[in-house]
Length: 379
Image (cartoon, rainbow, N blue to C red; front, side, top):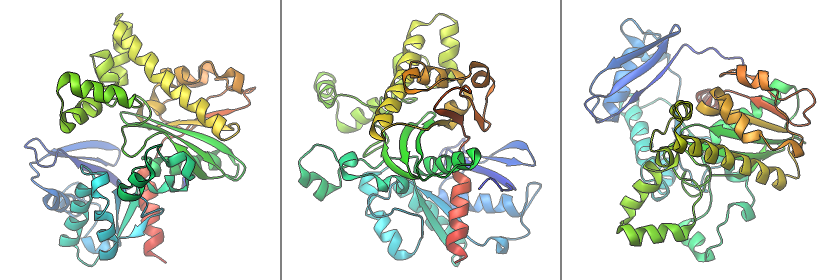
């Protein structure tokens, strides 16, 4: 899996806004090309232009492309693995739109944009939710009336599945062990954050739920909250569902607690300046991670590997320290020097006498999408 060669990478941000732009990496350079992109087909067309013409071209023509892979957010219970995007599959995927009304329609636009420009090229969907479809029913069900699950699919699905799948496989390769017989807790910690319990290579639990709101404290998401507090706030503040969603998803988390920023680096800077709300945000953030690690160790009957990935998990030693301090009773012991020196590189950061391996494994969702696409298109 680690035998890879990235020719170029990038993506368009702020589609539909006047300040949209394409960010890409080319020959080790980070480049930004500002250009108004009104909608997805124009965006895909622009990407194809950059790939084939001008100073950043890496292809002589689009004929060199064999397939296109897509990150698809919510596959519900319909997809437990990556699939070729046939018209029948797209119909099933569209039926999941209610579960991810902000993301799935955008995914469909991306697929249709490629189809409009390259109608005969195979396309593959790689689902954020697929890896978590191995959870047992007692882990994914909510204690609501059962017919709400049957009618509306209300259950826990989990997200970041492509990342959790990659790092749980990669850490076994890195350590030279087999997934079978191994209990791994994967901590994807970034602006969006989730944890998964992976036993014998299969996900048995994960922190996000029906939506990405459940679980850990995140950059602007509150994570776990008493549902009674939600209805209380709706009454007190006179919020409708859209306003409530904005409060919980966009105004909470690190940003809401600290009143400073959703970026953990800014939180640390605030702490250095004596900002007590920043201190509180950091402690709440890492405490929640630690609680989930403990829960999942209990769920699996122990843990052999704890790994950190994602922006903060890979780069912020303070997050890793805060999330594991106090877990010595479980056999978790960090090497302080290794932890502090590790940034965005594969490493073991636990002490030699730690009975649980603690690792940093940078994620690579794009590689997983590429590998799945290659596999499905070369059968």
